[in-house]
Length: 267
Image (tube, rainbow, N blue to C red; front, side):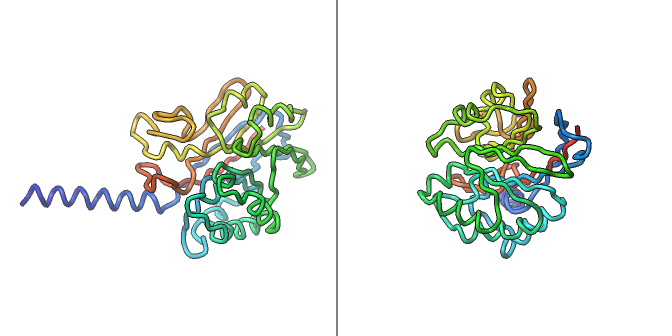
């Protein structure tokens, strides 16, 4: 009986921990030194949202919106998979965007799930109508505090244009650049193109995070993936990988809380 009670207690504890670990949002703070950033933009704050996959956090997404608002963002980046192709509910996903556009300018790039729905044009149009800047292999020059930076958005390659080709069409200029792209597994492509700071998602933190080892599996990378969470550096390139917020085919995260990333930039 003692062994049975002990086993039940372990199972109950695991269920509680897993539930909390899938429904409470972690905020990860990153301070990034960006070469060429004007001194006037020191402290520029970017909040990254990735891989919502139609997940909900509070009624009308108020918990998630409040978390982002508390970060006092200057810019909000959405790096794909705001919807899930397996349970498509655009209206539900747009609720959170409606809250975001009241906080700061919002920039968005597609993930593979938007394209897999076959309704990517509808999704982009709906976001644009809310005031979101949708970037499809485009660079936008943005003036902040009288200074110019570039925001480069790369469409998910499932849409027909590879990340390599998208990068080749938009070589670096003299302005500091922030790059949005769903895919972290092509890190070397960002490095070869000399991208300064790339915001990515897609890996879901490796879904199951093993203490001391990292993520277990990620789309596009397979088992024991290299790029799952945090900041990766090579040469002049830094890449941020968000663990994201939702789940897709595998419905549970383990030791891998949903995450928003707050990046504070310094020269």
